[in-house]
Length: 561
Image 1 (tube, rainbow, N blue to C red):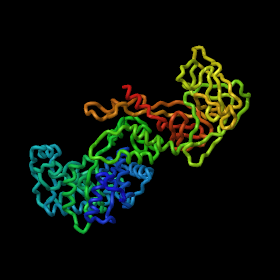
Image 2: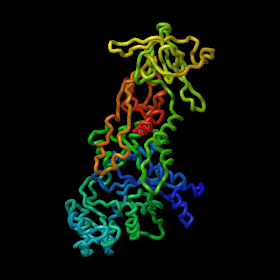
Image 3: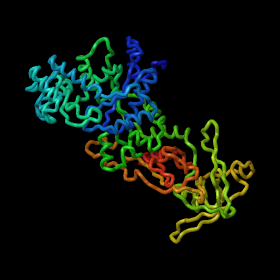
């Protein structure tokens, strides 16, 4: 890397140190190792950005390896979703691998372990094994099966593989040390019997390797130079290295496991088990519900991939777990969308506005800029007519001096159009305003260059022409959880903090240029926020998801609380 060492994170410093100590740059290889038992979430996004980012910085390959060692919980659907998420984030893996690619080699090594007296088949119940494992301060006791003969162990392992025994009757354990200070080293399980159909190997195997056995050896087989894991795997590093010691050939690259801290996100959960619970109990509509912390949920909500990458870069890599405010992610989303989205007009809480002195039946197509951030400005045409919708919040019959929108007797500018003046209102029998009547200054059209068009007024409001407006379903999303750390208290079910108002579905009206908008197209509804087209949207019924507001309103809410 050309970056100065002082700006490197501690994982990059480890790599730099290894390069200085003789590891050839050409031998650098990283990996991202997801389990295909659920959809990836924002925590995985950080790990993806870390590993693939290192691959880009060091111009080194990155493998995508699926840890498919538990067929009872794994599905091809999850494999496909994970690949889609990584590609959407803008990354490309070098080799697509699976732990199941190595099942035969892992089994062959297990046979060698038995022959060398480093593994044995244990036939105790799980409760008996738990009892004899000991505690952190008390040594464990040896299994009564620990000293089975090599021949008996080999026979039992082969019969386990062939499916002769039911689940739970036998396991294969590494023979290490039942009094070891690290309880993970007390004869850990290498294989368990599992009669379950595997999405890749079918019914070929009836035993499956445990994560600790498969992970490091897979890294070794793929010649991964640096295996970066989250902090909970720190106690596993000793076992990772022990397993490697048994098979390592000094002519090859020896993988190095190092750990970094999770970066938890406020007002959400990132446990796949809990996310699955939300889906199965129908608290959300699916894994890609826009309120979910999954990458597919964020994509459907309209988060740009570069915003997620920028977020991961901003929070960086740390040695200590901490809680990141979701507002930072939303800030990154706003920054990216501000650069890329077209500004359009939509009214979500409409009230009718009638321009009394505008000619009956007349319409104009006015020029509106698409995005002031564009290097080369582009424009579109928006229709204007006598009757418009404006936001109900943009009018007050009586208002104080701090209200800069439309009131009776005052003027505002209609965005891209004319200056209007409030004249009167029409109310229903309950006193609700149903129409606002106003007049317009005929010489004040935006961009016309007239003196009237350059006249300053205190406010500008958006609108849509009623004749031309397209009705749309608009889904307004709020935080899925009201508590910043919903699963932070083990005594309280995290679902107790589900926000009952996390979704509001309303009917709004949008300008006609959006008629042809396609799934995931993104827009800024002027003065309202950023929105994207939902996958359920159709030409005859447009559906928009609110991605994020124009500013952080939650900061104000939480400061008041």
